[in-house]
Image 1 (cartoon, rainbow, N blue to C red):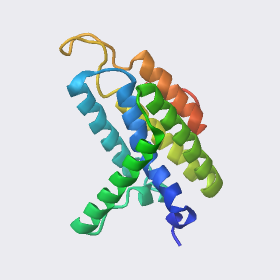
Image 2: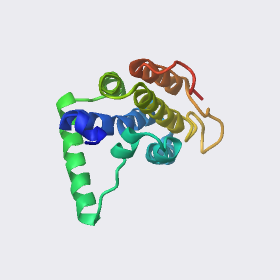
Image 3: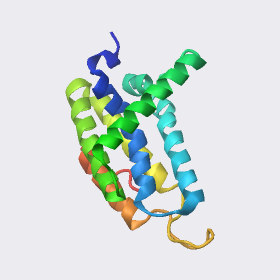
Image 4: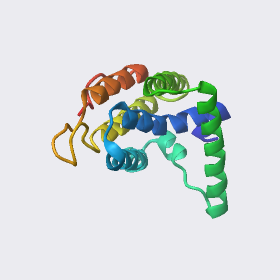
Length: 179
């Protein structure tokens, strides 16, 4: 019996989608233009996958990032994920960046509660730390407020504030990973 068996299908989807949603909320926190947005979304994906090397002992992260056996399975998993994510976001009726952030913070709190209840203390800490690292990597991926790549700031006040809210929602130690 693996760690995935400890969770219902909906709980597992929440745990697996929360890191990507954190990345999306961080990317939307402060405008950084098209190129900046691409950099931030790329940073989100890379930081998620980097969890495998950052936390090689984590059964939870390994299971969440488990690779498909073949192309057809990968395609089916991705299609299923897209449909669930689209339905979930549609049901939430998100129309603004503030509503997206509120939704993500609610998901962070729910995910934290799940890992606290169903995982070891170490696994729960690792999941929370990994999630905050993703937020930080996205915040540091592109400058906000500059013109044509000049000026601006690496981590905006809006991004710093959202990171603090994510840390709080997850119950992660405040400020230990903020850029």
